[in-house]
Amino acid sequence: MCYDLRFPVWSRNQPVAPYDLVLYVANWPAVRRTAWMTLLRARAIENVACALGVNRIGRDALGHDYAGDSALLDARGNYVVEAHDQAGLFTHTLRRDELEDFRAKFAALNDGDTFELIG
Image (cartoon, rainbow, N blue to C red; front, side, top):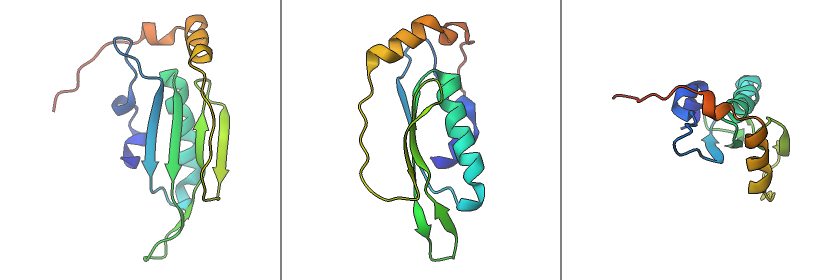
């Protein structure tokens, strides 16, 4: 859910079974685009994982505008694909060896506390 981007615990990468990419499919309105872009970058950096955010563009039936800003970020938080306000199909090849090399040099996932979410 797109709102979950605001709550890092739901996206927490744990060293037991780490993921390589986190995906957010979103409906973030243009008035909150700075938060969308900042939080997407934060989720990549804090989880030492790639982050893919797919956000809508255009205007909905209620008159809310959506800026898009769909993007793929690497584990360092660098943008590798930016769609801005464009619709379309964008491709990029992620290299697992690059991610593993970065994780070996910056092993932050090993220092995180384990936890369990209880409903």
